[in-house]
Structure formats: C-alpha cells, structure tokens
Image (cartoon, rainbow, N blue to C red; front, side, top):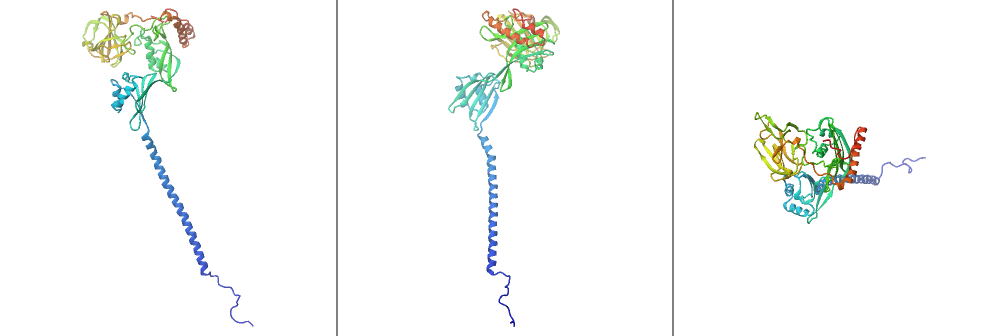
Length: 449
C-alpha cells in the first residue's frame, strides 16, 4: 500500500543558484573590459599615427625651404658698355672692399681693367650674399676662374674644352653671299668671316652676281656636343664672272696667321675694297661734273655714295689715326682718318660716331653708323679718299699689297697649298672642275684680277 507525498528521488528545479549567476556576470564584464581596452589601444595607435604623419609631412614641407635657404645662388650677366669692372660688381650688389680685394688679388693672373663690353661674367654667391666664385669670358677660347679662399681670392685662366671639327661648305649665290651661306645650312657669321678674307679684292656689296659660287674648308667648334661658333677658315674659293679667287691660311714672316693666294701673294692689301660689308648699292660715283639733287646745279662729287639704311655699320678701310670726328657742315657728322703712304679717308653723313680724335684704328674696325646728316637727300654713306691731298676715285684705285710669303717659308707654304687646294677641289660638284682645280696652284694662279 503506497503512502501519499513526494518521493525522495523526484527531479529538482532548472533555476541556477545565485553564485552561478554572479560568475557569468563577472565573465561578461571582463570580456567587455578587454574589448574596450583593445579598441582603445587601436584608436590610440591610429591617433598617434595621424599625428606622426602630420609632423613628418610638416618636416618634408619645411626641408626644401631650409635647403633652398642654404643653397648658393648663381647668375650670369654681360658687362655693359662704358663700365669698369668695379662699377659692374657694384651694380651686382658687391661691396667696394670685396671688389677692390678681388681686382687686386686677380691682377697677377689677369688685369680686370681690360674687360670688354658684352663679355659674360658668372657670379656665385652664398645664400647670405657673400661672393664665393666668379668667372669671366676673356675670349672665345679662355675663361678666367676666381674663387674665394676666405682670406682673399685665387684666380686661374682655363681653356674652354672645345671639340673642333673640320668641314667643307659650298654654295651658289642667288641673292647675296649671306643668303647663300644660310642656304648651305650655316650661320651668317660664316659669310662675314669669308668676306673678310677676300675683302681686299671683292666688294660683296656691289661685285656679287647671281650664279657666283664658293667653297671653303672651315673649323667648327663644339662644346659638350653643342655647336658654339666657327674657328679658322683653312682655305677658301670664290668664283665670279670668270674670275677665280682663292685663299690659303698660312703664316706671315712674323709667324702670325695670314691668308695668301696660291701664288704666295698676300690677300691683305693696304685698303679694304669697301667701307661697308654688305647690302650697300652705289647710288653715286666719283665725278668732276655731277648734278646735285638739292643744290640743283653741277659740281664735283669726289667720293662714292653707298645707299644704306640709317644705322648700318661703317668700317675703316685701313689702319690709321682719327684726325677729325664731328660735325663738318654739308658733310654732317664726319670722320677723317690719316693712313700711311699719304692716304686719308673720309666718312660723311653719319648718324653716330664711335671713335675720337687721336685714336688709332685698325683695318675693318667699326667706327660709325650711317645716317643722313648734313646736306643729304636720304640715308647713305659718302666715302672719299685722298692721296697726298688729291682726291682719288676709290673704285679705280690700284691699292698696294701687303707682304708675300717669305722665300724661306715657300716649301712649307707649297705643302700647305697643295693640301688646301685638294680639299677645295673635293667640294666642287663637277668632276671635271675637281680635276682642273686640283691641278691649280702654280705661280700667278688664284687671282682673277
């Protein structure tokens, strides 16, 4: 018989005891705390990284400014006309004491009182403006280098490291020699150099004809692979109207470079054939009975008029001394130069005079600019020449030559001549002409007039 009530083996309730709930709550809190710490560390690292990046960026932006502030400053300028070197340095902000010290220290190597207008000067300064180094282009081949030692300046002259290449240039004249040289792919300076060689026999303003031809062997100078300028013309030829003019570079009895015809006669004469180099037509010739366009009457015109734009370069036709340079009535601004052997030359109607009385001038030197001052109907140069006080027709004047090759130098000259004429012959387009050219070179050859 069973008894009423619960059995001792009956299952208990599923609810946890209070200690169990506390342990679970503690684990949750620990987990949340750990997650919050990790998240805080991540946020902190991100914030630090951002601040570091911003700081490094500010340093990177500041560094070029700091470097630039400490970097030396270099500038290059040309020496102005009518300026001493000390005045030039003063214009560049260099104090008088530094300038005087530099000029004095450099003088044993080079006299900076001889600087030429237009030549380049390079100046290297510290960021604070102190002069560190200076360079001066003495001529196309040499550069003066000056450096600061802290207690003064050291100077040396160095040669420009040109690479020289010898080339042949040839062409045919259609309009002018300058245009023909440019058509051959060269610069107009080469035409001027070429004209200087034959300037005693040919007036390239008036004597050139369409169809004239030329050849030359010339040196070209390169600096680090870039063309700089022309060197010497070693041999040259010009053919015009049946006349052939040839020139070979050799040396005179004193050892100076000079040009000679294949016969050994000097290309240089006592006088150039023209006071103007190019682009000047003759508008009026020498005459004892010319109708004057302004005075409206006949009277002598004892010179040669060259029509040329105002400002064209006027050169002296021979070495001499200036005896007049100023206003001369009907002649306007005028220059008179006294030469050897009783010759005097006159240059009239000038717009600008570039020489002074008493100055010695050299053949081919720029002495003035053309104009229309005085009694003139337009811009031109009136050029005149006298011999022992008598006016002469310059176009018909038999000009005296310079010295020929010395007899002792003839064997050396003949070897140079043979090489030069062969080089010129190789430039001729016609094979028959090449053969004829190569066979030339005996006495009397090379001058058509």
